[in-house]
Image (cartoon, rainbow, N blue to C red; front, top):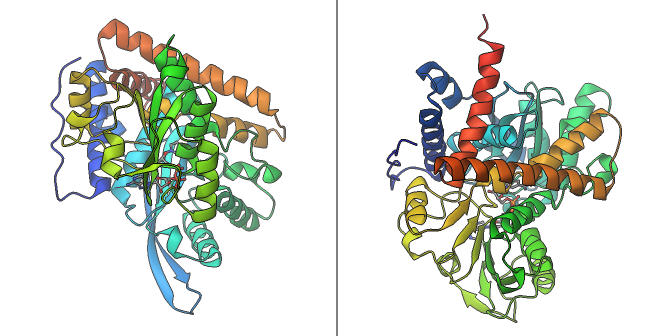
Length: 426
Ligand code: NAD
């Protein structure tokens, strides 16, 4: 692969702008490797549709606020657009575009018939009451209604949203349609047609990717640190502990905690659900957020937000294996430094693909009014994850690529091939 110099992270750019720069750099590298022509490169670098909406919300005290919402469909050449909805104060159009682009490559990489999309609302859900959150969700959905639908674009949970958010989205869409449309979202409660195993699917995929990367190594000797203790991070900690690894540190927005002998992940989860965070858990030491990323562990799982591993802290990372539960946690400059120091990075579009795999299974079940058992879902998830991991590993090995370069080369090449076969209309 032609060695390309990663963009220097600008100190003044928003996290979203940095995420989009990373995504475009990764696309450029893959396009160069695949020898794609300029026209196709431009097409793949540009989202097919981007919608920015204003979302008025009535607060409990009667005031009206207005927040910004976004839905971006990056690519639909292989099927309907698919991607989560994020509620976070720093969300902007750049970030949502980057996340939509990564979804496109991820779906192609694991061989599910979707394009990539993402949505976001620039709001901090922790500052809203449940009723305000419901109003924001329903009004946002109403604003993006022309874009979504089971054959068009299917949202799912992401940072700051959950099963309840998906239930409100399904209801809002269904009320507008005049009948129940469970297939408009995935990650719903099972009683509304959600798939068994969806809630833990991303984390299960991270566990499968970690175990595949560890190969023959006995998990009993493997230490793990997990950044982020939300839907992905907390379950990943649990599944890796269940697999025999020693989870020695976890963090969330409230702080970071560690115990060299291994945390009792179930007890930390109980503390988290009682107090709202991992901070204050009594049977562990306190760390700073930065210290967690630089701990002397075998495996680091970033499972929070983008851009946490940078040119500045990458030289101090001591984990030998990084498995990206989050999307975009490693900046391209950090990637080069980590590769240079022999660290293996299992990239986001492979490591966290378990979520969209089971979302796809949920959508298939909804469109066929059918349901699979939890065991059947687990088997299908494992098969697709292991197959993708095998393909990425084989390409990386044969071409001397990093796992990220190989994963992007596969994902981008499949989307490029879909464009070639479909041709350009008119
Ligand atoms: P979430 O909102 O459930 O959890 C996010 C967690 O990150 C929270 O515990 C929060 O406190 C923590 N966090 C935020 N800032 C932090 C910081 N500076 N240091 C430490 N922790 C911090 O979100 P999630 O659904 O678990 O998503 C996490 C990541 O995984 C995102 O990048 C998301 O795009 C990605 N992802 C999620 C899914 C899914 O199914 N939910 C699927 C694929 C990828």
